Structures are given as structure tokens and as C-alpha cells.
Image 1: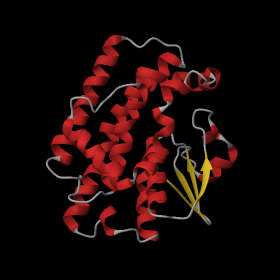
Image 2 (image 1 turned 45 degrees about the vertical axis):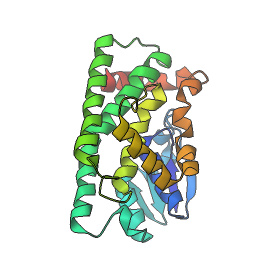
Image 3 (image 1 turned 90 degrees about the vertical axis):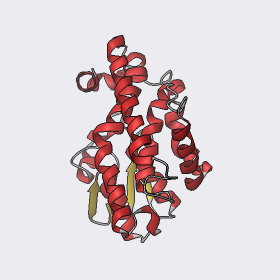
Image 4 (image 1 turned 180 degrees about the vertical axis):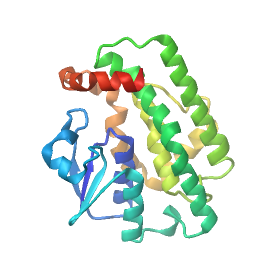
Length: 239
């Protein structure tokens, strides 16, 4: 089984952590989204959507991180707590997975691009009002994550880590890569992060997030020319 991943991408990190944590055998096919490798002819045969992550299991190809996580959980019979058979616990996980796409995922990604990639790599000044609005959206999503989804529970679905926590933590970490400490002044979020990190294992957690958390240094070495092709699309999406 092959997993096509770029660990700068939040969904790729969730798939990577899940596979590694559950000792799922796979061949890592590293993909550089920044270099546009997803638009190559060979990758197009794997995923016509041209996004990562992607999975190839024999002749079977699958796109979309949530679909891949569920496929891995079911195929490899991972421990029940990841995606419980209990109706209400599973519903709680599905609720978070359904909500996050247009909330914490969108807002965390936008903050990362506005604070770091667009000004440092594309050389475009981001208006302060755009930054302020993006931060307000991110703060709203983080508040909902705390108040609605975590509440007073150790994890989103209850006493144990689940796919919901895994998908959540990689998104929450994304804006941290731009130098924004989203955990400052949020003791509940910080305590939840620590529990998630402990459940995953610090070594694996750090391994998966090493690239994103070194982004401020990495941008100094990036070839800005490689992103120029995507500049109109990026600016349209985030500005």
C-alpha cells in the first residue's frame, strides 16, 4: 500500500500519524505540493483531484483524508476508540469531522498563508484588516472547538483519543507554524493538546510536525519562483 503525503499538509499529517501509530504497513511516497508535483502525469493516475493525501492499495486508489482514515481503520481493524462502534460516540466524531472542513481547517490554513507564505514567499503585503478578520475567524473556531467539541471531556468523543482529535490537532498546529501561538491564554486547549500528544506519543507527534513547525526558517530557503505559477490562485483563495 502506498500513501502519497506532504507533511506540510494538515490532512497528510493526520493520515501519517494514524498509519504509524497503528503499525499499518505502507510505502511513503513523498509529494511536494509547493513544487506542484500533484500536477504531474503519474500522480494524476492516482488522484485526479490532484490533492494530497492519496492512497493506492493494489489497483484501488482513494483520495480525501477522512475517507482514507476510515478505510485504514476498517481494513486494519484498528482499536475501537479511534472510530467507536458505539452509536453516539461515532456520531460525536462524525459531527466534528463534518464541521471542521469549513471552520478550523479553513481558518487555520488561511492564517498560515496570510502571516507567512504570502508575504515571505509571494512578496505580497497583506492588509492589516485582512489579518485581523482572519484572526477573528480563527479565534471563533478555536472557541467552538473548546466549548462545543472538547467541553469538559478529556477528548472530543469522551475518555479516549479518536479520529476527531487527530484531525483536530493537525489543524490547530498549522497556524503555529506561522509563529502564532494559538495555545497562549487557552488552558483548556493546551491541556487537550498535551493529552493528544501523549496519546499519540511525543516522538511520533514531533516527527509529523517537524516540517510545519520549522516553516519560518524553511521559507528563507524556499525557491519563491516555484510558487509564482500558483500565485493568482493563492491570492484569490486567501485575499
